[in-house]
Length: 147
Image (tube, rainbow, N blue to C red; front, side):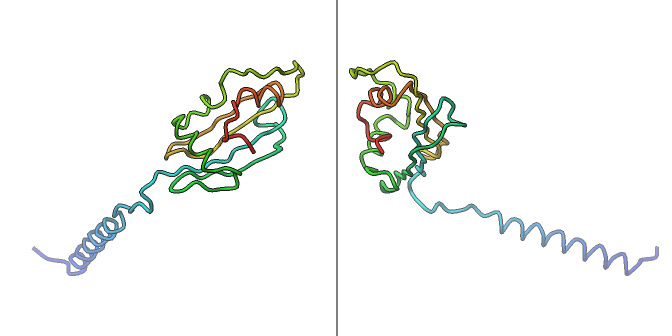
């Protein structure tokens, strides 16, 4: 039986490269350490004119970050974060309260939106009101959309 030294060298080299590649891949696949103990809560809140949240003209927008501390461009981030925590991040609970405000039936639609992440979960919320008075009445003076 005749042995080919080039074939043996090629087999040993290929095996070394293959096993070395697996070792390098395994070393790179180490778990990533969390940078924070808190799940991310970062939102962009808007108030816009129009019926459709995709085409409405944004009049006001703020950012709100709730973990680890309340901050952002929102005028009262601590109060807004507290309300969101009490509602467990359910924006529909913040905006669906009964209103004791008397409003005209004027159709001048206002859309409120929230996009981002609440406690690590994606958030995409929008609701349309017939006018600004109706919106203010349904908000029950909450701080989240008071900007």
